Length: 219
Image 1: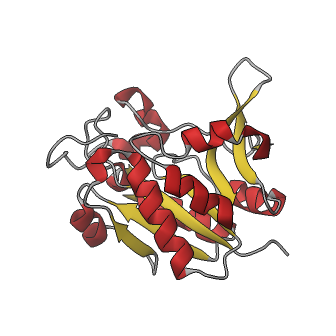
Image 2 (image 1 turned 45 degrees about the vertical axis):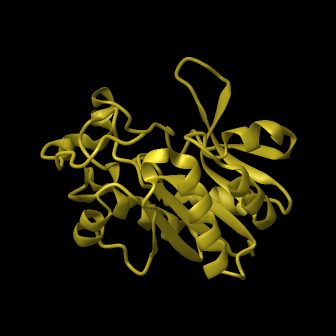
Image 3 (image 1 turned 180 degrees about the vertical axis):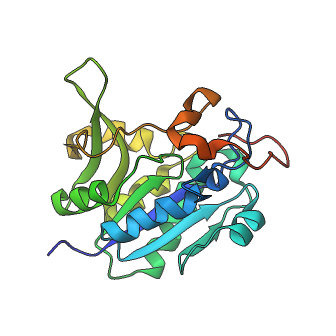
């Protein structure tokens, strides 16, 4: 049996490039996108779920059904993803002391499936970092993407070094020999919703998105 894996969703930004407010509330299949992401992590085998909220946090908590997920509020979300990753990882690992690993997902990937989560959890090895990989159109190369699974100590180390809007990027670059990329191209496309051109990923439900409120953050 795979070791217990906690799940963390980063959802604190306000979607500056998209310009439609927090991506957590993007409508997908009739419900806020954050609900879909949490459901995939839960059904894929995560033993515990946490989500980092920031922009429009009160609205997300009022409109989305978080289903027992631990909400971590980052009041400094506009400083970038790094701080959200750090606070979320620290909170999730403290709340789930039996978790041997931490899976980190982004809120803006509507194509994420429970099958992707399950494959990553099953393939993850102690002392390693496991990343979903996706083939790009017209290429046989597999590019590293999200979600990512960190062994508990590596999650803590990556979170401690996270800053600005880079998240775990620098830590992953410095520890590339520890990263195992698992091809998930047969299960998902790995695409995220960053700009208006990406709205078709949400289907017709992208119409009627909540308007952005508050100061412009980093995405």
